[in-house]
Length: 498
Image (spheres, rainbow, N blue to C red):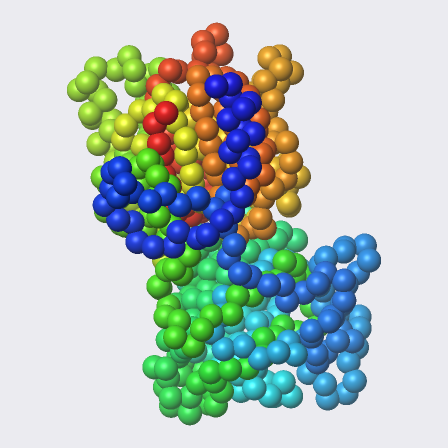
């Protein structure tokens, strides 16, 4: 059968019933009942901001709005004054209990704002009368950090992601980033990017617990039930009468600085939700005939995957193939140590921290022709990753919306101008930064087809040999999850040999 025909057939398989159940031992014959694998992930988030106006928001609507020059971006405008006595807080009309909130934000120099959680009375200071205020700040700005002395000017609980006055956020981002990417961050160990750069934040609020992920890193983990709220046991020594609120509004707590937001969306969770538990529809059952490479089990990192190291160019299949068995074993031991230091399971997902010393992850066995499913998400604006097929780069993963405006899934390292082998994806089928995407990849011979979220983005294209362009792609080699110095998460990775 020609590959074009395969592509047409597979493209016709739409998202069907979710096989959300624990992986079971393989069955054979009549015992095995196949289910059609959903082509895309439906997480159930809804938008809190329509990108046009303040529908669904109340409070300081005179200060916030959309500049026609920046459509889709919510802004706090410093030159828009509020009536005397009105707080600079923009709050949702609706109240929320348990939820996951995702958004992107941009700070100006010395910018200051906040995220109010479970606000019961919008007329009062949310830092104390809501469940909490999660700080939004230009952490490295000169008003808040002395760069020359390398010294904070504020209390630890006043920096971005902190439960204001109660729980400090993590500020240890010093000397960690790979390939010079530390220059993106504002300074002082903060995980906030420099003024004028977009950040991605995910906030989980379940019961009395809060988790804050900033640009892919967990910077705050707190259980507010541990605090009385009367001021006797909080670091700031102040009463926080709203700290045990179980419902309330969400709000942006303005201080008259030009902070910007976009792609604000929320997923409400049931009262029975528990922090750290994987949503039932996150863990998928492997499609029939596929081997499970990762579905949430921590032990799979060592049993199914090996590390890849760049030392002595051992990320190059040609170098590995020429090495003696003893040399390969020596270098694999080094690579596996890097794997164990930088790849882990976080919230049921395979997490790569992107830090110095970390590198790609590879299947322990080689593949010739294969079919593959894999879910992935990047958690930083302009984030980058990819899939190596038969040890060669790459099926591209990147932020298609904020940087290149070219979709993920393309065979990035093809030299189209010289060979005619297409390198770009046919369309942008990517979700927003922080949302889950699903790859479906089929490789037969030299040809690759890729579907992203159910959309065909690479149609039967030759994958060139990056390592030696005079050769065809290797007939058999490992599959790799690529390191590109950005935190990434993966899940539901299933592979079938063809």
